[in-house]
Amino acid sequence: MTVMNKRHLHLIVCGLTALAGAVHADSFSFTTGTPDGRMGTASRPSSPGKIEIEAADDFLLSSETILNSGTFTGLLTGATPTVGAVDIEIYRVFPLDSVNPPSGNVPTRVNSPSDVAFATVGTIAATLSFATTVISPVFTAANSVLNGINKIPNQTTGGEGPVTGQEVQFAFNVTGLLDLPAGHYFFVPQVQVTGGEFYWLSTQRTVPLFAGDLQEWIRNANLDPDWLRVGTDIVGPTSGQTFNAAFSLNGTTVPETGSTVILLGFSFLLLEIVRRARTSNCR
Image (cartoon, rainbow, N blue to C red; front, side, top):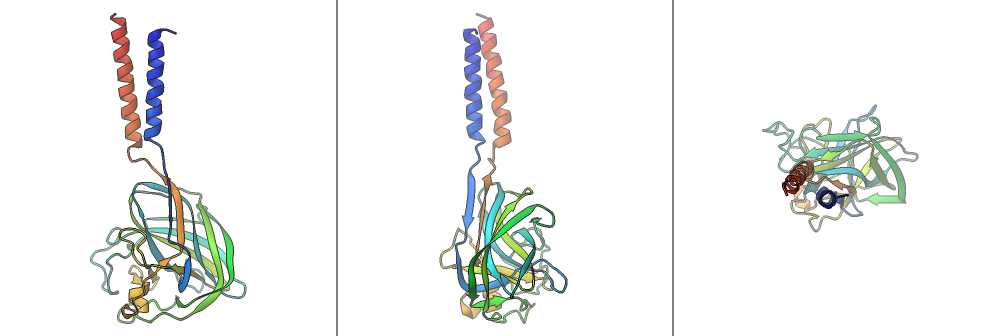
C-alpha cells in the first residue's frame, strides 16, 4: 500500500466516523407519573352497544421521534372484564387537522386536541401489541366521566362520582411505524372491554411537566369533532381541578440533519480524496 493510499484510507475512516456521530439517535422517554386516585375517564373504541369515547393528555417532542413503546394505567370495572381491542391515537393541537372556526358546541377549543387523529396504531390493524399487569386488585377513583359528555349548556355535570375496579397497567409495543415530527401532541389510549369498562386514571398536576403542559380533554361520538376539558368544563370551573392522565412513552429521536449530513459529508470526502490524488500525481 502506498503512502498516499494509506492517507486516503485514513481520511475515509475519519470521515465515516464523523458521519456516524452526526447521525447518532438519542433515546426519548416521557412519563406523567403514577395515579393519584382523583379521576377516572372512560376511553374506548366503538363496539356493539357502546359509542366511542376518547380521553386525551398531551406530551411534547422537541425533535422528530419514533415512538416504539409505552404504558398507560387505568381501572377495569366489572366482575369479569375481558379486554378486546386496544388502540393508540395521536392528535395534534387545534386548529391543526381541524375545521376552523369550530362549531361553538363547547366552551372553547383553545388548546384542545384537533378534530381528527394525526396517527393511529392498534391491535386490530396488527400495528400494536400489549400486555397487562394488575397493580392493585381494588382501586377507587374519587370521580369519573363516562356518560356525562355533553354539549353546552349542559357540559358541567360535576362528574359521575366514585368508580372502583382493578388498577391495571397496559404496556404496549408499537409493531408498526409511529414516526412523529417535532411538535405538541395528545396521547389517546382506547381499550375495548366486555363485561365492564376501562377508566384512564389521573395523575397529580400541581407542577407542569413541561412548558405548555395542558390538562386532560375528552369527547364521545356525540360530541365529535369537539372536545371538553375534564376538569374545567365537566367537573366545573369553580372546582379548581385539572388533570393529567397516567402514561409513559419511549422511543428514539431521528437526527434532524441525518440524510443531509450523509450526502454532504460523502460529497466533500470524495472531493478531498480526488483533490489530494491529483496533487500527488502532479508531484
